[in-house]
Image (tube, rainbow, N blue to C red):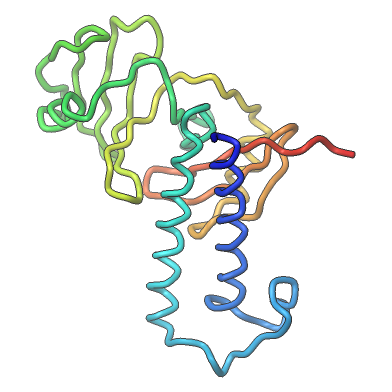
Length: 210
């Protein structure tokens, strides 16, 4: 089932690129995506903009399907290099607990609240709410986000997927709001999106090279 979902995600990302060539940014060079280009049949600039935003939201919704194997990462630029947040981790708070902590967050840190991973405290930061779990065995920090479908999303400080600095650099440089080109990183394909918190990248298994 997971393989089918990831395959569907790959096909959807390709469809987004095709539609972008066809509708959002046609040019004579769009021959790679289209048999021909028909600028006279295009919708208005406002319609193209709305359509672009809708496609981006749908692509990001599709991206969340890969979370089960820590195949979605959030990459941020920190003062000493890249900070990587993981779509999956050990400290999995339920939505009710996350909402309570979000409501109590302050810049100095809200009141401490008990969780199944030990006491937690929420901090209100410019980029969002950070939940700290100092007593957890691993995965002691969570960054609260909302996905493109409006659901609460928790990014984990620790996860199983590890990328090199060179791979992270390639991903960040390729990222676009509507999704950058597909990259091949060792045994994975990667597609990166620019979002409000940083660069979100979806990874899925690539077939062996022949």
